Length: 82
Image (tube, rainbow, N blue to C red; front, side, top):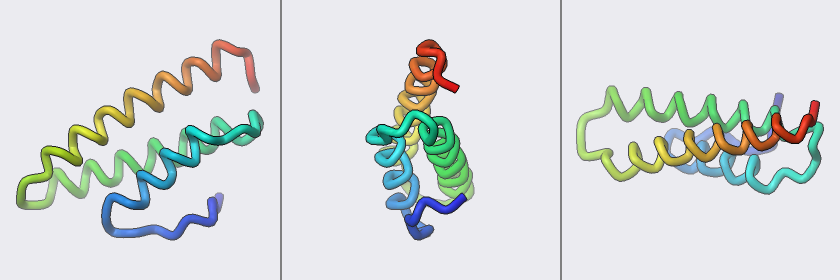
């Protein structure tokens, strides 16, 4: 699935997908947006884990985003949206 957002080697890609999930108003696309954002967050977290340097701030942001996406998914599922 293409979201029209180009992949970037830095933090912009996962941030763009996260924002797209947050503002998605089409209920039929929301689960897909959440899944895309979660995948991008996991991939970026793996990159940071393997990278040298101080990535604490972005790592913390990734953890916060995963929590927010989990909450968004739970709210979406509680509404009975399919």
